[in-house]
Length: 359
Image (tube, rainbow, N blue to C red; front, side, top):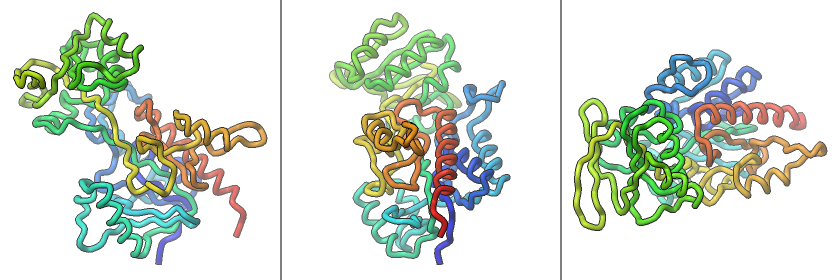
């Protein structure tokens, strides 16, 4: 028999744990599925200096551990398990956390979209683990990596995917940024406020970023650009001391010293199992009534109440399903904004559940 819950939260990290904290304090009967690697991207971050309340900073894993413990203190049930399939076609919503016997859970993280779809279809023939009246999606987004030697070894020790988070650690140091879109331009400009130099490495002969962002970068005296180039290796012992760069036209390579490498080639929202369940944008992010896109604006306009306020701003295209954090956020991608959205989603879910007609 499936368990019954008022609320299921899918995903951990700042948004999921904050949602669980607020929902538990509201005495909602909830389960949070944290995954086997709970805590989100901050589990790979050494020092966080821009999360309010920590004067000396805090280690990412410690912050996530404390947020989890705080939610559990108020009664949140947290399971270190993956959600393998969902059915949002009707309430109660169905949540699965199992796989067929011949499917390796680790393989799920490397499977293609088509393979995942086939596995999901098999999963849905099994008994669901939970039936829930409401759901909060907080599965986050993963940074797209270069997949080069040394990148994972030095992640958090000189390799970063967030200059807004880490730029202050590189005061008067030499840094490199990989990418050519708006994210790379934003990271470059954030670094120029602290670093001695910033070199942008881009595979093509021109950036794809907006013209105004390009101009700001190209006109900054601290910035230089290596066109038609790629970073192919990260070098060092205990931390990054240099990188290997390849000239893609001349097929030559050389090593340069650096204190930090910032990978800014985009993010992938973790939304594969929600395809065809809720509305996603063209990049795979969950659309809510507060999404920073035309789809979000349209959803908000359609949800105006009698006071001309947007009802349940964190609601997705499915009544009773909410979303928060980097799985929604196409712009800021900060721990504090993810936590704030988790709070909003929990409050929206609480009010929506209260408004349901009694059975």
